[in-house]
Amino acid sequence: MKTKKQNKESMERIHERLLGTIKLRDLMERESANVQGDGHAKVSGLVTDSRRVTPNSAFFALPGLRTDGNDHLQEAIDRGAKVIVSESEQLDLPLGVTSVKVDDSRLALAQFAKRYHGAPDSSLRVVGVTGTNGKTTVSSLVRHLLERPGKPVGLIGTVRYHLGDREVPSFKTTPESADLYALLRSMLVAGCSEAVMEVSSHGIHQSRVASLQLEVAVFLNLTRDHLDYHENMESYFREKRKIFNGDNGSLPKVAVINGDCPYGRRLIEELPPHVQVLSFGLEENNIFRARNLNLQSNGSEFLLEGPFGTMMVTSPLIGRYNVMNVLSSFAILHALGHSVSDAVRKVGAFEGVDGRMESVEKGQSYKVVVDYAHTPDALRNALGMLKECTEGNLHLVFGCGGDRDKGKRLEMTRVACAGADRVWATADNPRTESQGNIFKDMRKGLAKGAKVSFVEDRRRAISLALDAAKEKDTVLIAGKGHETFQEVQYTAIPFDDRLVAGELLSAKLLSV
Image 1 (cartoon, rainbow, N blue to C red):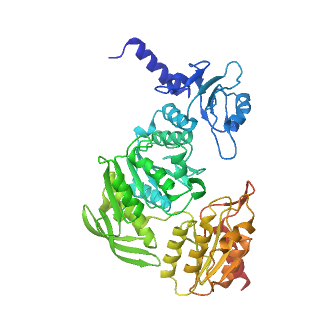
Image 2: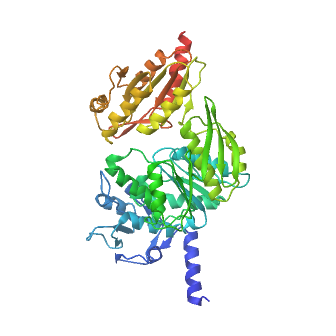
Image 3: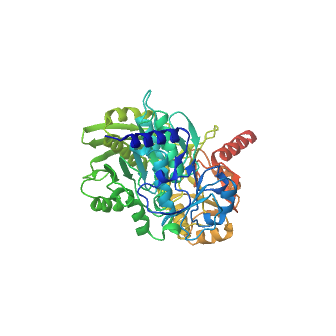
């Protein structure tokens, strides 16, 4: 039974939360940290960007690839920060500003954020989806299958965030922990009881999801990507594994894993025995299995086998890899205790995801598709799927990003040459690197006799591909998908493949 003093302290905390403030000491419960200053200082927000500091914020000086938060302490203090959290031993701070020394500032941010926002993940059934390809499609499809009248479902992903009562543009696939827990709390307030989120390897490595309680953790696949960051596939895999084996701070109740992927099979072998596993795939021995695939230009049909029996599925999503995405989504629904038969009936109404196999129609006699495929495996899948449903030639516009994994460039070109009849290599977020250097690396993957043109201007490359297309052909514009900008020299220049293709098609049809 609580004492009067404990009841008084509880009431004080409730009052503080209503005001949007909480004492520093309460954020540091069970936290080993060296505090210099007022441990009872009231904190009104957790901030990692000095430009976003408001009075009484706690500023976390995070280390970064290009800049260090410690270089911006004065700006944070000038804007009203009263608490500075840093890994630095000695900070010269003015009177009235409290210093908190921690061993890992990103981990501390996650722990502080969870407490500041009242641990919303403990009141939500959270599904975390990770994998090189398919995260956005699966998370969006799962949200569609879960939603029902009066029961909103939250979503955090690459394209947008659904908060239950409103939708906001995404600013990061997996947000910083301070933003993540704020989003989860907003979902609770809006009446959500379930949430689906994409979990990137960067987000795991940078402790953005540290200690996040996942009801279901999902592993879709692992192929080459982000090796400029993770250095090799083994390190890449180990980051993904953390949300399944407890290294991230908690264990999921259920793990939904691609049993056809070699890394997925390895993950199953390495899981703690008390984590329930639901495997999915096309091969035998998977708990959720698809067979008798019928892949068409407007969708797919397959026979679904699972713990509930067998049923026929008709999906509007095209391609073999989307069969895998649908399979994983059904397994997630089952893991959450929902009816898979209801989901099978509902999947036909799914309208897809922005920039994922999105058609651009302006009355032309050939097909134009925009897709986010920006890894060798994703591009191979996209080309293979479109090849199966294209009577004529398959044309491809693609590029490789600057300041990223250079070894991926020749692989992307090899895939392009093998899968398309005609290729236009062009710019795709060159960032600070010269397009000439990017093209030099891409040319290493050229196949003998391949029809490849290198065109720096992406709009011009798209225009040339459309000019070359004839009736019954398909043009795939790959790499950027839903993105509405090009990253050039730290500047975001407006550019949307879907809008550009639409404008060019309209102009060409008018000139005929």
